[in-house]
Length: 389
Image (cartoon, rainbow, N blue to C red; front, side, top):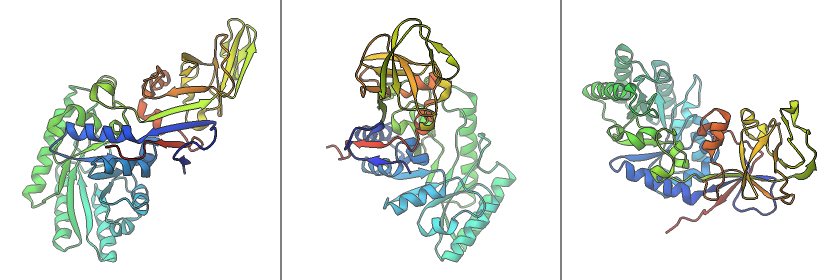
């Protein structure tokens, strides 16, 4: 598990500072964007690298009515940590912990008849009705049931089980493929198909508690998609789901994670000195090098070698040469900060530091991956834990 501390008790090699006040403010902002819907805080993959339990608690404090995870194991961990209320999980494989989820009062997603059979068997064994949400594939092509005969069969099977008292159909839901691409024709097409599939289910007698399709980008930009519940993941953590949609500040959001490290070494080197594996960087003249004790084992993308930005001594520096497993080098251009000086890889940008989006651009990826991949060797340090106001 990722090490967590509430406040630094000793100098740390590196730290991912998690600002829970920023997270709570983001929840409130997102709720205001979808005032007619409940908000699900998606805390899968350790809350996108931020720490699932602490972030889930903060989100609930700020008004999130639901919590969402990918795997049942993630959902069960939240329950064991004492998180109350509605929790949903959606990524199941045959033989999964259905009974444990039923007994923990977790909403489970069903995309096909095999899953319906397994959850109903688990509910019978537990003697407790399962809370089941039926997922429609409206065009993403991943999980979810296809429209037409497959959907009709799933709805009919779920209704039979509900009539037997084995389960309760609590939700109908789907997921957008291109909501982060404004104006993409698939958005309207998926929304129309979702309405049709929900309409069919309701005509057959389904009375769901919630209908939902909106992810973070749809919550921000497609108000017609809000229905009864919006599922906010990356936006919860103050990161824009797409630069084309706008910056976090454009939506009133604030990045929650700041990643920094303390320089492990500062040294003078002559011109023509190769730096790191393969000597892909050679010093243009006499200079100083700073050693940042983070590498790809900590989640720093090797694809950002030669491009990744770092703030040291109030100036942007760039990764010099290849990022190694545990460390990388920056050319300090003759400056001589002390050993132990702070190197900020990314944060909100308030102090002129790079953002997760800057690292995403440097690595040719998305900001989701930058924060989610920060590894277990980096302690999460939580600040502003007490609820404001």
